[in-house]
Length: 212
Image (cartoon, rainbow, N blue to C red; front, top):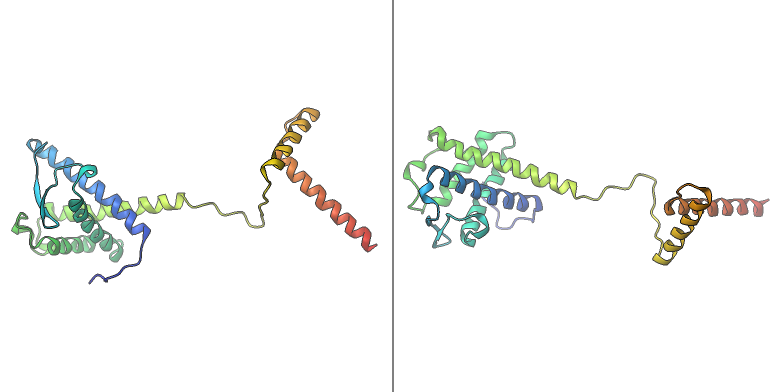
């Protein structure tokens, strides 16, 4: 599917891409150093943004052009998950097609990988599947994070009142005095509610007297 020139800002998409790109790169580097310990501390140069940059670095210190390239892969993974929800193989196929499109001019990439997803060995398919699985996890993580930061809705029928600082101090002082008098704690909130209810009752009683 062709990408539109302009895309509306999607905070979930952007957060998922950041989540995916950083973790994906660090996971790749961890595997690289575990399987090739001799690569530790050695530059691994790749063409990124028209310049050869070292990608054998943690995400935090990675060249901005390499980060941008990782994010392109993340956007493709997000689109794959969005287009093929619940279909891991179709999403993985999309991820592979986009990878071939992005890397067609990179001579460092093995030519054997530039073939249809169905013809790839399982070990290579698993790399595309890992992208899909990691992005699915990223979307869930950022969606859950966004939900947890939403302000709780007020219960139906409830209203809020505002009390200035000076008045609140007087109410707190009155609550403290009342607590000492009755021998049990009385909160400022409870005293305020009682006061409002008393005023409301007095107004209601006065209104009935006038009608009579």
